[in-house]
Image 1: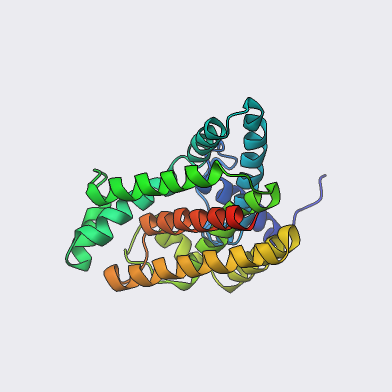
Image 2 (image 1 turned 135 degrees about the vertical axis):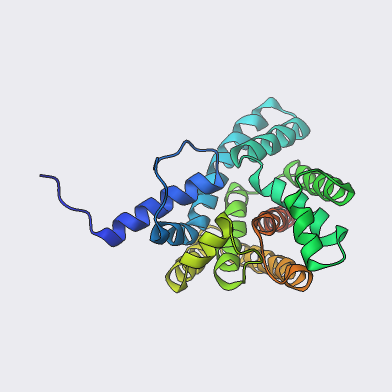
Length: 253
């Protein structure tokens, strides 16, 4: 008879699978609804999934650089980046741009974010974000700094989910918020800090600080506009965090 796995470790393992399933296009590992404690556990593992994304992108970028064209390599790496995450965060950023800047009341802004039609603010925000990422990817930077980028952004997402109010009563984001707490926050904090300092030293710390400040600014804007966060705003936090960290990697590399 195989040894029994302690339930708390089983919950953490399923939580890691849930985080991978939420944040990437990886095939589902757990083919059943997640329990409440498993949803909560997933939040603490977001930075680890971010590192996996970063390592995959680093490998792809290194291979594409053999083509000899920095611009082509940057474009294809960016395309892989979007596909690997299912454009989940990019879609959230687009809806957040329309909602935050296209409505006059909190209820109207939330209503606009529910509408998946693309408006002028979404188009402008998405184009500017992708152009900035493309420009940064076309410049050289050490692989350790680049691999760290998605992890830093998702570490900030973990803390935003746990510490900030959710603006809607229902939704996947609301479920994550309800069932995550201090243990997941500490796991995310310690993991992100260890990755930043362990992989790149002071440069990683500088990237972590800059990313956190930008994500905090997004949170403060969202609190002022709609009173809390939504799934779309989670996407905006990740995308703007990635952009900040990527620009930091390019400037510090």
